[in-house]
Image (cartoon, rainbow, N blue to C red; front, side):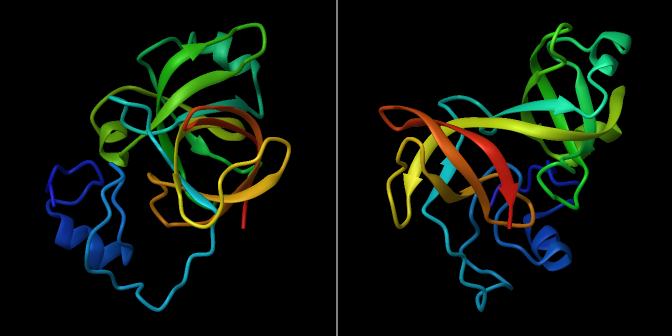
Length: 181
């Protein structure tokens, strides 16, 4: 346990007791869990690329014009809810790149604490276009063109997602048409 505070709590133990999950925003899986009775059924986990804080997330705000209006650029923090995929939680995202023409933002999910200590752009709701990351096989390998169940290692509430596998290069995968079960 790191006790890094990325989740907004002082200690990992405090986080687990309050959120009742066994995976932290940094992707660390805790050995003890309050959710031992829940069996997560997924094909693979999606982990960050080497040296990155989370898998890459490509999002499209429901109002793409806000990307240009707010002048969102690399390094900015945006907050919002992935309502298109059906997630009930507001996310804090650090922008890797932005496109003023399409409105697509390439981001990393970061802990909620960062959005309390810096200027943020509240885009309110967005559609998750794609994820890119490293696959850790649980039940099945990713197959191009197939909708599969996966768990992003940074998902704070451990909801199984589904997506269509659109690209595989070694153990790096791109997933599109994201939905949450």
